[in-house]
Length: 121
Image 1: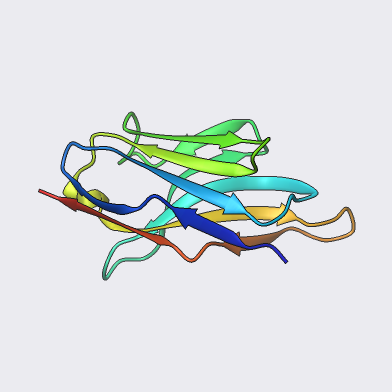
Image 2: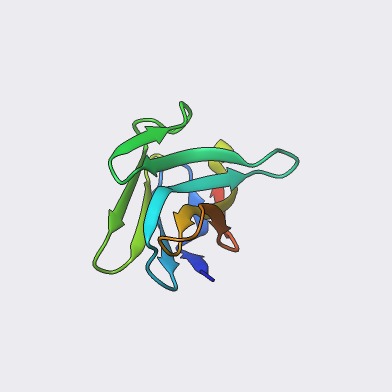
């Protein structure tokens, strides 16, 4: 099994920055996608950004130009740098890996427990 643990959330004023981190408990045989999702109160979980096949990245329109996803392979970490935060960015942020644990296993989704981000206006 894989455990993903997010950190770095908190309370920040509008216009401020936060960096979220996601640590995986083990390395995977392969990673289809590594990404960040968020869920605001009363809303469905939505994709924020994702690295696809270790190369291309996609961003939700609402965060383009403000958020940046990155990874540190040596440390087995995934990051989300969030700048120019807005009140509408307030949500619980989840790390997600779609990965294969071995060469014999199929891909499956792994989720962290989430970290709360609150942006005050």
